[in-house]
Length: 216
Image (cartoon, rainbow, N blue to C red; front, side):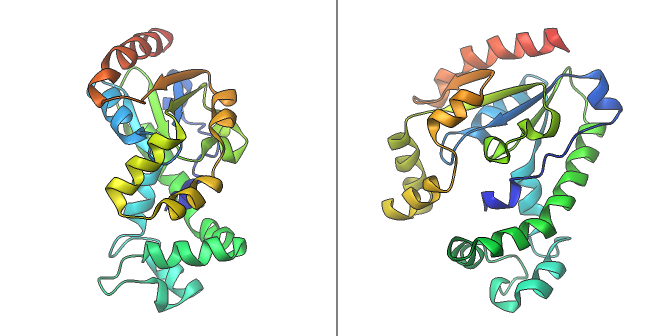
């Protein structure tokens, strides 16, 4: 659930941060953040994905499960011991205080793990993937550049419906809780157009990779 990663981005003040450019990669649901991040990683960037960390924390046996169970009860925990993301999402959409309580559990854990991974990772520059970076309102607590993965809203909706089976109305409700396309673009230092096929991303990723590596 992307709401779990809105503040996984407090200031990174460690040795790795001092030596390397830190890029914050963001975009709306269905924009293709993971696809683009993987291409940067393949070129040697040190990529840390806060949504991936949130999933690991809420997987069976994850470090956040005990606290989530204590706060919300067994109804949001699946039989295998993982967070029931659908049940949690339903609660959070109906009551904003639920999301804030979940964030209070997850954000400190995500922040600590992000810092640990950035400090340990090797690469000419670091890239922190934060799905709701713009919504946080603080440029991810100190990233040097904001990279927005952009595509038309209709493309986002189609992609999410295709991969998740959610209805159009449900996807639109998720989008309504996120920053608008215009808000993300206004916050961007760099933009990658991901409105087409993944193969079309290479040229754009290459150009930014060279720039980021040169700034490191």
